[in-house]
Length: 82
Image 1 (cartoon, rainbow, N blue to C red):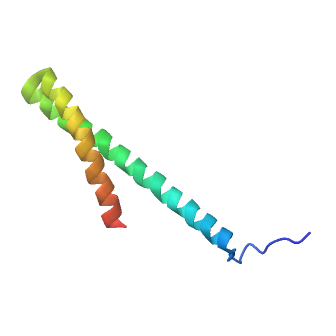
Image 2: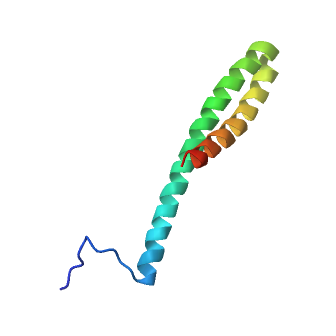
């Protein structure tokens, strides 16, 4: 049985594609987690201010808008910081 050396990367076309796919999925998962954190923070902040100044309707609209805006802003921050 021949064992592969862990120090040497697999340079076959299948190995390169597998490595690229794995790193792409890891990056996508992390960026979506980052966007989720932004959505929660944005929903909390805008929901609080919307509820404080405009009542329950303002809180609902603030939560929805904050989730969308927070997710987009944090997602873009992740990609610009990289």
